[in-house]
Structure formats: structure tokens, C-alpha cells
Image 1 (spheres, rainbow, N blue to C red):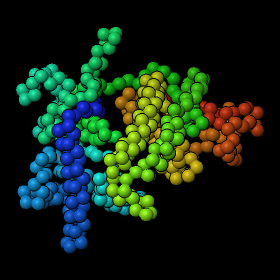
Image 2 (image 1 turned 45 degrees about the vertical axis):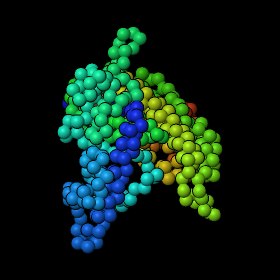
Image 3 (image 1 turned 120 degrees about the horizontal axis):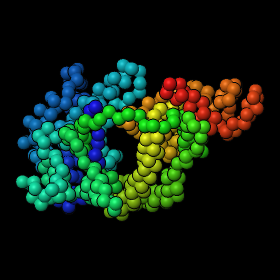
Image 4 (image 1 turned 90 degrees about the horizontal axis):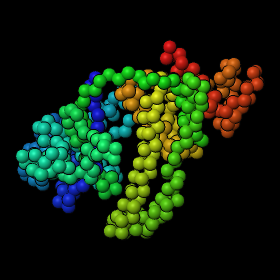
Length: 407
């Protein structure tokens, strides 16, 4: 079957390439804001909407006279930004028709989000250089070619030799559609979207599993063999919270500010502290993602059928008492990763209705309690007298759905 997969590499650009990368990110931000202003003006004056193609043609006509500096960047960067703008408007109107709350497209500020831009590969310019035999860039063996930027060195080799003589390859095996370049805490990354043909995988040999996710134990896993185990999450945000507060206090004292403490001008000392804060957030996210990737990979490699609850994570994040804890362990990311990997590995993923009383239903006799407060972590069934751990009982009930689906 054909799938689209992303390959992500860290870049090691020189000073000139760093300037070019920043220029591309700035051109994307400018094109998006210019397109949004034109979209609004066309609607106000003519009462109609426009599209990315029309805006791009108009922007091309203005390049020579009004924006000559845009010739320093690839044509794909502003074009993809206008496509993103059109997609944002489509999502907004689709949400209105469906009754969902989707924000109206907003102007982008320089410091509100991380720098990123996307480059299309219709011309086949984007490619990895590994053998040093490229005609235009001879001798380059650890680089990626990006339009207008040239051959940028990669931080790590995509092909690495392990100690036991095993070669680990992290290379795209199909057509590269586009490259997304982003900056995170002053480090640049490129993500290649590739269409690959992969063989249909048979489900792994093993027992089915029911997984209950929580906060005290991130995942309680009950398998068909009768074993129940709990997996704890690292909770990196809470470990970094003390240092983060200290850095945020330092940041609030840096820069030129008015009498109300509002930032007027960003100084060099302000940027230094801001970069430290960004690095800490990146470390927190990397620890969380590392844990979630390892856990989801282990699950899809060992269980042919997996059952989880279809939780309303977005709604639960509105709870002021639990929002920070839920965001720290990454429930939403766990589900997204598990869904993607289950499809890739041929694993059947069963989602149980979020209103199913899995915690307050006795897994032995089936008796359902009228209520079970969140503070109660263990309870005794009044019918059969079985003592239940709340999370383990929910995992066992979820396992029953997996057993039915696996038949």
C-alpha cells in the first residue's frame, strides 16, 4: 500500500545559509499577511472571496516594483504560504457550516510562533547527497539540496554503522513531495514528506490488550493472558517547572518596558533569556515524545488488537485543575501516534465510547455502581465482594471489547 511518511533531519547550516533560512521564514510571514489583507479588501470592495492562485499572480506582478527583495528567496515559499491561507479560510467556513468553533485567520507576528516555511518539489530540486557524485555539488556526502539555499549539511548521517555491523538507514524510499523547514530554539530542522510503497503487514502474534490511560499511572495495560501492568509517564514539565518559573521571572525583567511592564523593545539580553526558555520547552517536549514513541511502538509490535477509550481530551483540558497534568503526559499525542502506527503495522484499534462506565463496572460480575468519584482509587463490588483497583478494573473491561473484536 502507498503511504505518506515524513523524514526529519536536523540541519547544520553555515552563517550565510542561516541568513537565507531566516529570510525565507520572513518572506512566508509577509506573503501570508499580505494575502490576508488583500483577501479582506477584495471581500469588502467586491463582496467575493479570492483564492491562492489569484493572489499569487497578483503578488508576482508586484515583485519587480514593490517587493524586489522577494527574488532572494525561493518562489515556493510565498506560494505555499498563500495556499495555507486559502486552507485556513476553507477550514473557517467549513467549521461555521458544521457548527464548530474555528478561528478566523489572523495576521502573523514575527515573535508569536516558530519560524517555518514549506518548499514544493515539483521540479525535483530537493534531494539528499550521500555519495559525493552529484554533478553540481561534488564531494557532498552528508547534505540536502534546498531551492535557493543550496546544499545544507545535515547534523547526523542518515546512514549509520552500528557496533554489531548492522547498518541503520533513515532514508526516503520514494518521491519527495515537499520539504518543511522549521526553527526550534535556534536549531533548524527539515522534514521531507515522501510517498512510499510498503508491503501489507500481518498483525503481530500476541494477545489482545485493553489500555486505560490516566494521570496516576499513564497507561494500565491488561492483556489476554491475564497480566495487568502499569506504565508511568516521565512528566517532564513538572520536573522543569521550577527552572521555567525562574527563567520567566528573569525574562520579565529584560528588554525595554513601559511603566506597566509591557515590552517595548527586545534587547540582546532579552533574546538570550528567551532562547533559554525555548530550549527548556524543547527539552520537555522531546522527553515526552521519546516516551510516547517508545510506548506506542512497543504496543503495536506485541498486540494484534488494542482497545482504548475515545476520550474528549480537548474538553478535559478546559478543567483548570487537571489541564496542566493532562497536557504534560500527552494523552492526545498518544492517541494520534497509536492510530498512525496501528494502521502501519496492521493492528486493529478499537475505540470505546467515552461514556462507557469502564471504571465503575465490576470486571468479574458486571455490576455497575451508581457513582464513583475520581478521588476513589479502589472499591469493593457490593455484589461479588471483589476488591478492584480503579485503573486495573477499567483496563480489564476494555480488554473485553478487544476480545470481542478479535474473534
